[in-house]
Length: 515
Ligand SMILES: Cc1ncc(C[n+]2csc(CCOP(=O)(O)OP(=O)(O)O)c2C)c(N)n1
Image (cartoon, rainbow, N blue to C red; front, side, top):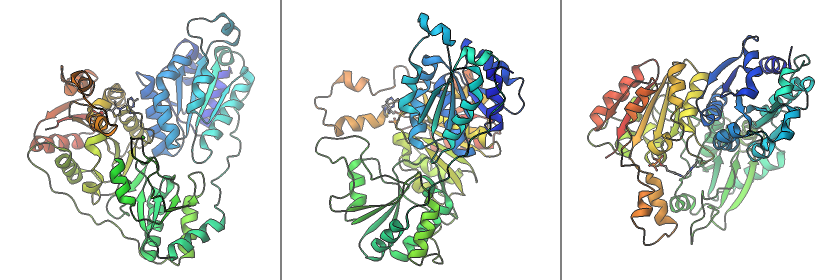
């Protein structure tokens, strides 16, 4: 058994069953090993940003890592933006990056680069295997690193000779630390704050946004009068009818400040002290009022649900009923396609138990309200701010949950970063309905231009925010990658086309031309 095969066997033995790949010469032994080992599905992405983003979406839903297979420094570099997003979302992932054979590196062949240096800022764990005998143990360590709470990006670099030389036996995954129990003092302190009667918010992230965490938080809020709030962007939230509805802290700084106005205590439950996405002249970086106290209940590495249980006990809220959203469908919207009307129809049609991959950017900002009473579903967002995650994330989620419909809500500018994900959806026949919000602009940046105080904005600047000349034809682009679709220019058409997509078992794309 060569090193590559010992690694693939180690991965499968460690529960890694899916590999998103874009290989090259240095990864050929790994690719060849895939056919010798049962239990590893391999999915090709036609750009490394698709590979890493799909591995992120998969792990968020499967709750275990996928592997990626990337080609030396440049292949890794192409995938880094979505590794950044995965790193920020605390997604478990095992990247295998091929490198030149150890003895070949000294010659500075064209593809030689500092792979560890490229990987480090976006990985919690980086290692280069020194020889074939070590590869299995290094792979097992990579899995353990990926699964270490709250979930981490692990990158293992595999020089070609470590893959083709004789390897050792597959290695078992070493013990993985569980989520740490929070110190009881923090629970007592949070309970004291909540009992004070002063305005308090439970700010929720990570596991605090799953149904069980939300339910506990809602009991605590109902008992104590505290408010619940989610982080601005959420990695995965369980929501819809029968679940606790929670608003998120708005992205625009002025709106965020308004939401937090008057609050005296913010209790962090798997979330961080809230800060603005960017600095703006004359606006604060931190969003909490200056006189508000920040209290830590649980970091996202810790056992958030256990901490909420303890807090519920401490304030006597275990039996207090949570506030659950009722099944309440929005009505189908008619007329022009706007962020409001399209959100309303999405709320009207969202299928039960679907997974929403949301990269709707400015169009999608208000989608939580009209979908609150839709049947239960999961909602995934980009936590790293690097656009181009949505379509790969939808692809990975569909592979993790083949029995669930995936609804990929995608702004047109963001779509163009990793549009090739559609080809993978077609090839794997994934059940993804994509909606492209074709406002034909980097609309959010038009607002940002004003927000940062840019003055005397002229044609050249505005041209950088405009996606026209020519208009992108998403239906044709999708067709070219094997995905059927249709364009809608009115809400009546949108309602029909979106419903058609949802009724199609397999990938489908609706281009919604925004008014
Ligand atoms: C990798 C990366 N490059 C550039 C940006 C800056 N950026 C933020 S939003 C945006 C445009 C978004 O346009 P679109 O996806 O069409 O959404 P809209 O603003 O029109 O709603 C850009 C380029 C980014 N966030 N990430």
